[in-house]
Image 1: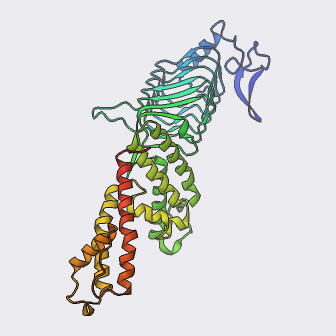
Image 2 (image 1 turned 180 degrees about the horizontal axis):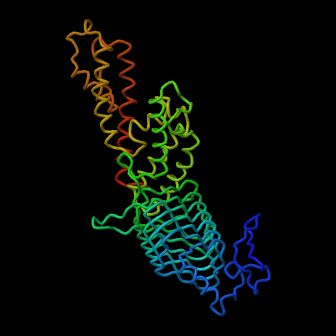
Image 3 (image 1 turned 180 degrees about the vertical axis):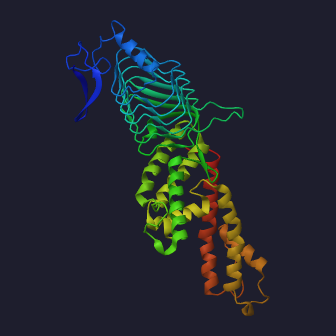
Length: 420
C-alpha cells in the first residue's frame, strides 16, 4: 500500500495516510493539492471524521474552496501549520482550548476569526494573507505571535475590538508580537478599538499601519510603545542581577538563571524608528498630544542610542531633555525658569559683588532686579562694587534666562497643539 509522503522544504515526511488515487504525486486526500478533490464531499467528510475523533493535526493540509470551522471547539492543540486555504475559510466563534498553530500557513481567500477564542498561544508566524484576515472581537488569553506575517498587495489584516471590554468597560491589552510585518504596496493592516499596551512592533513599518481608537502603554506619564518598556525592563533586570551577585559579573551563578543581557546601544534605533513613524501618523490625524508623547519617545531612544549622548551630562540631548523635556514639557521648563532667576541673582550677589566697595551695600533684592532687567534685554547700571566675575555672570544671564524662557514658550506651544 502506497503511503503519502509530503515534502516540506528539503525533507519528505510520511503522514501514514494511504495515497489518494486521484493525486498524480501520490499524496493522500488531505495533502493532495488538487482543487477538485472535494467534488464528492470525500475531503469534507475526512476532515469532519478527524474533528470528531479530536485529531486536530492538519499540518500541511490543502483546503480547496470555501471551508467552515464556525463554532468548532478544538479541545487540544490545533495544528494548521503549513496548511493552504485556497478559498474563504471561517473560524468564527471557534474555541481553541490549547495552542493554535498556523505558522507558515497560506490563506489565498478571506480568513475570518470573528469572535474566536484563543485560550492558548496563537501562532501565526510567517503566515501569508492574500485576501482579508479579520479578527473582530476575538479573544487572546495568551500571546499571539504574528512574526513576519506577509500581507499581499490585495490582502489585509484587521484587528477590531480585540479582547472585548468587560464590566469596567476596559479592553484587556492584547499580548502580541507583530515584529517584522511585511506589507506589499496596497496591503493594509488596521488596528481599531483595542489596547496595544502589550504589543511589540520592532521591524514593522508603523507608517503604513492604520490606527483608530488605539490605547498605548503608559510610561512615566506618556504614551509609549511596549518595545521601549521591554528595553527598560531588560536593562533593570541586568542591573539587579549585577547588584545581587557583585563580583560574579559576567559569570554563571550556580542555581541562578542565565545573567540577563543589558540592551546594546543599537537596540534603541529600531524603537526610535517606531516612534518617528507613529509621530507622522498622528500628525496627519492632528492628535498633537500623541505627537508630543511619541516625539519625546523618539528623542529619548535617540539619546540612549549613543554612549556620549546618554552619559555626557552636558550633551545637547541631555540638556534639552532636562530643561524642557525635548520641547514637550512646559511645566518642567517653567520650573527651571523660576529656579534659575533667583539662583543666578544669588550667584552674582554672593560671588560677583565686593560689598566693601559698595556704598551703600548691595542687597540681594537689588541684584535680583538687576538680573531681571538684564534678562529682559534692558541696560541697567552695574551694581556698586561688582567685580569681573559678577560682570561675566551678569552678561551670561542675557543668554541663559531668555534662552530658558524660549524653551518654555516652545514647549507650551507644542503642548497646546499649535504646530505648523
